[in-house]
Amino acid sequence: MFNIGDKIVYPMHGAGVIEAIEEKEILGTKRKYYIMRIPLDDMKVMIPLDSMEGIGIRQIVTKEEVESVIAVLEANETKMPQNWNRRYRANMDRIKSGDIFEVAEVVRNLVLRDREKSLSTGERKILNNARQILMSEIILATDLSSEEVSTLIEDSIRESPEESVEESTDK
Image (cartoon, rainbow, N blue to C red; front, side, top):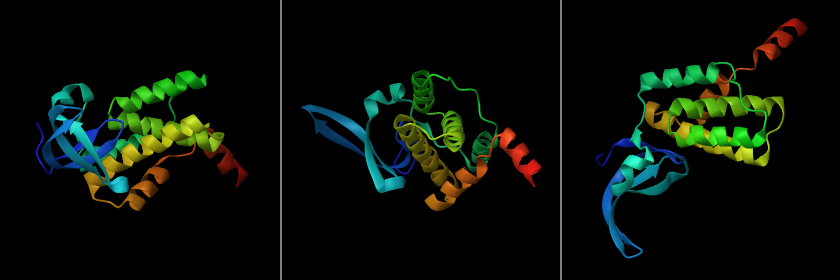
């Protein structure tokens, strides 16, 4: 059970702060909900308390763990399926896991792929969603602004080793 003021992650939506715990009647059923505010877009989300376990809600990472997330962003691209449909499903499963390290991998891999060749509309949507989820948690864990976190993420994702070698030999 979480309390008002706790910082939590709601997979597929991102990290936020619990502002209230309210009982609401929706479609004739009364249920208790966490009212969570997500810092990006100042969005509010209602999370039913009685389905918490199946959703995968967790507390946000610590400042120290953010350093490990940055290390994931700095690492080399991991192998992804060549088939777009399989790659899409694998990335969605990683995001749905709610694991910040999995989300960071999705962001890194898709940013690198986008730099190599433009992403399809579907993959661009996944990248934007994953980036928002990642940013919301880092913002709450570090108290940095959204602009600072965006720059941190972009600067952490390195070019692939082949590009680095080519660049150094061109000079």
